[in-house]
Image (cartoon, rainbow, N blue to C red; front, side):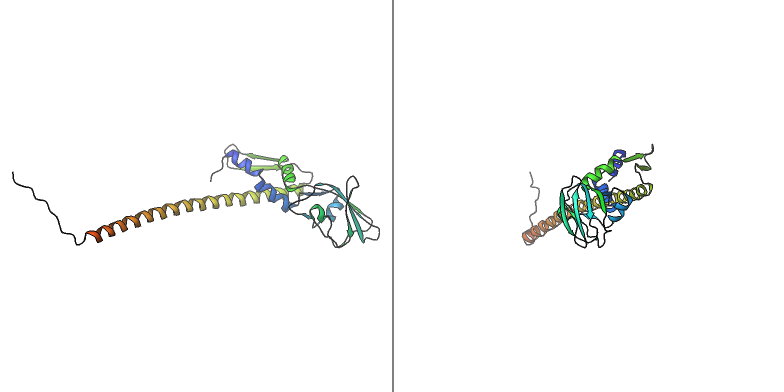
Amino acid sequence: VELGDRGWLELVSSNAVLDTVVRAQRLFVRGETAADSAALAGFDIGEKVIPGNYRLVVDKPGRAWRLELEDGTVVQRGRVGQPIGDNAGFIWTPTALKPNTTINFTVRAIADASAGLAENLRPRLDPAGNFLRITLKSSTPAGAAATLNAISDRIVAVRTDMKRRHFQELATVLQEQYDHAKETLTQAEEAVRTFRQRTWNAPLVTQTQGGG
């Protein structure tokens, strides 16, 4: 399967590439500060998640927490060590939380985060079409480099899978053609055997040209 210039550019921003990168790089969650981001280590989401701006309020003793939306709506209450936000699609059970702190963060669905990532990507092919260059607009160079590396790896994986599927489809077509030819040959051989069985002891009829 050969990709033209447009095909390569579309592959870069496809969900087949970006959804995997978003999940692997955890681009679906963003802390308001560096401390918030550090506290979100291990945070994950399920297939269905309620996106929004959240804050996790930890009490003074550091034993209980309260998960709220930005407008103050309480989503869930619990004690440290219990899952946080499972009713909102979060997969998050921190074993320790700093007492008397508030963690502010934003959660997005995978598809929304992929769309946001695509908007900040600038893929470009060189005039000869031999090299694909991708730039990413980001506030953190280290994060951008990690994301670009993940995108490059995913492009290679998807391209390899496309080739494998193409070869599998081609092999299936060739196998079907072979099976059909073999079946046709078998039928022909069977027809010959049947004919011989019917005629092997039949009298030989010859024709002679009569005189005038």
